[in-house]
Every structure is written in C-alpha cells, then in structure tokens.
Image 1: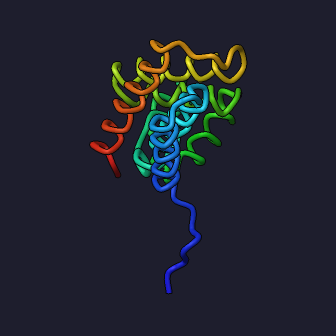
Image 2: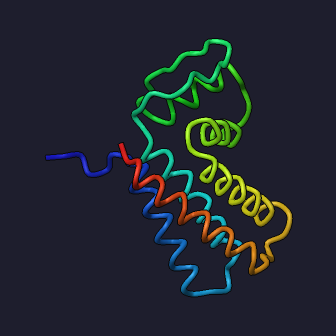
Length: 146
C-alpha cells in the first residue's frame, strides 16, 4: 500500500491555489488572497521544477549541479550565499526561469510583503497583480513540470 501522507509540494501548491480561489470567490480578505497566491507560487516552483540541473549558487564555481528538490537547492544556496529562504527563492527564480516569470514573482513577492507586514488593506490594482502573477507562474510551472 502506498504511503498516503508523503509530502508533495505540487499538491501543496494546488491546496494553496484552492484556498486562494475560495478567498477570491468569497471576497473581503484581499490580504489573504494575496498571501495564498504568493505561497501557492512558492510551492509551484518547489513541486514542478525539481529534480533538474541548475547553476551552482556559488557563481565562482561556474558549473551546474543536479538538485533532487528545492530543499537541496536551498541547502547549497545557504552554504555559499547565506540569507533567508525568501532570498534563496528569489535567486533561484531570477537565475533559473525566464525574465517574465522573474518579473511576475518579484511583483507578487512585493505585494505579499506589503500586505503581510505593512498594510493589510490591498488596493484593487495590487490584487490584480497578485492574481495575474500567480496565473503566469502556475502556467509556467505546469509547462515545465519535471
């Protein structure tokens, strides 16, 4: 019998996407809609883009490394670059996706950071940015599913 409780980042992304869509439909919780969009995007990257060969985080090494999971990438990143998990993901997206996805992720990160730490009242234009960014990221990750 297969283990039913084994963690799967893609399923986690789908769960966060469902929460995002529920909040979107219900209305009234724009800050949480933005937050669930951001965390869904994180899990889409984790679940869809590994295992794969990516550039080594230590740019002086100028080589690629096979990473079996985002956790292994982040461990390597922290060993050579340091910083927070969010910095590691920013570096990963910037250096291992395309310019459009990097732009969408950066916008989503900024809107989420503002909503979580500065002001939970979200402008309609920022909510639209979060929704569109999540959709771009979701489509990219589904198209690049490993």
